Image (cartoon, rainbow, N blue to C red; front, side):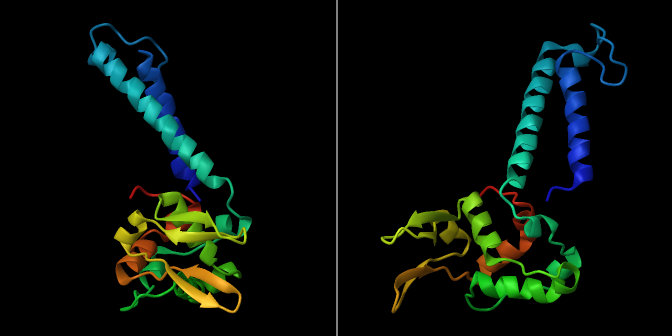
Length: 191
């Protein structure tokens, strides 16, 4: 979840940049004097572009909040707890990372950290993609980009048919651990 204080600060900054992009002093509401650099046409264009970028950030923040479960939105883990998560020397599954998080943060949350939160976030980032199998079931596979951060999908077989698994190498584990807050908030990163 995006920090509400940060979100409010961003909204306030957007108001100031919007005023400047219109040639208005954000503190007094008066038109900027002609002789100030802030009223220069190049600066006005700069403030307008900055205003547009702030709007995009706010849109992304709003969209990232949609589709998350209440449990995910309310899940709490401290930076100190995140620092305690161990990277395996071998490839592991996202389930093992989620179980570590649960062991560290279960007393605060009273609910499980879902593996799905990690894989859904990796889809948002473009490291995984959803494909529909022959039986109409949606499955997640590592993308080429996902391979670059340490994900590799392998096919396994059972009496019910073939299914994909995606082990995460130590580099990928570090990437996931470093982005736990983004996973919880649903905020993707650029890869």
